[in-house]
Amino acid sequence: MNGHVKAKIIIILFGIFFLVPQHAFADSQTLAVSPTNVQLKLDRGKVSQGSFNIINQGTGTYSFNVYATPYSVKGEDYTPDYVPIAGATNISNWFKFSLKNSTASEGQSIEVDYTVTVPSDVLDGGYYAVAFGETNNPKAALGVTINERVGMLFFIQVGDNVVKKGSIASFTSKFLQYPPLTSTIRVMNNGSTYFQANYQYTVKDIFGGTKLSLTAQRVILPQTIRKLDLPWKNSPSIGLFKVSGNVNFLGQDHFTGTKYVLVMSRPIRIISIIVTAVLVILFIVTTFISKKNKRRNKYSKRK
Image 1 (cartoon, rainbow, N blue to C red):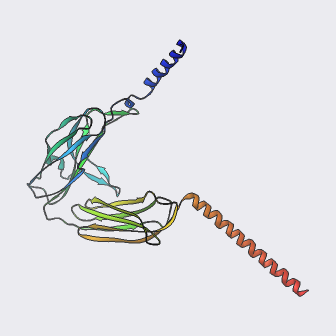
Image 2 (tube, helix red, strand yellow; image 1 turned 180 degrees about the vertical axis):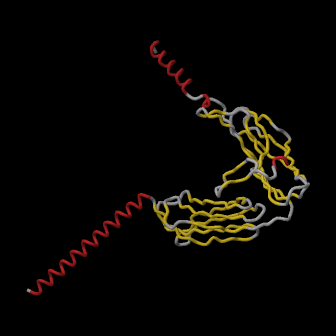
Image 3 (cartoon, rainbow, N blue to C red; image 1 turned 120 degrees about the vertical axis):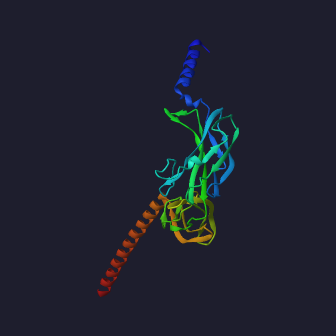
């Protein structure tokens, strides 16, 4: 290898090192929390204790803070909101943690103990918070500083003087759909505290064979409607199916009913339109020829 070639290789390597963003060489910050949520029923003035784990699933060692914020949602998609609501109880003041900050090495799990103290002067009802673990060393991506954080949700019912009431607001699934086949269940909570909804969603072919069966759990907050989108990710490009669901909450089953859905991909729709157009044209042409032949035969007989 001559000196000229060596010089080119050194220049290329030098350029790669400085052109690749620095965060590509930096440690990857990825936190996880376990468990992800807890549901508590407490009386006024009572204390609950427990623990959760902050897990470093990234590479390298980095520190993190632990703190609590209120939790609420916006819209039927349940966009989370951690800002205290004006005039409402700031539930983050109920929390104390065994540590406010710590350092986790790669793969390490740090246990955090918590204490929840319910004030003696709050009203019965539902209260919601999230305990966060947030990195202290922000990572940069495309010039934007990003703090990695994960949270454990707390759903707390205080006292027994609460209203528990809910219903299925709607179940929709369009008859003609592009894949993936998708249905939507909207669950309404018009009570004063949260409840857990356990739902089952089934897709069957027209012969009764089960093609998809989904089961999951979701928490529904009071005075909200939660939209549950149910996609069949691997649905075929064409087919006729029956979809149905059942949602259990507050000790009762709520059947959604059954709907028929015809799935057709865009290429198949185009082919179907072309075939239909050709058949219509053939029908028109053959009808025209048939009528013409009848008139000709009729004219021939007259002669």
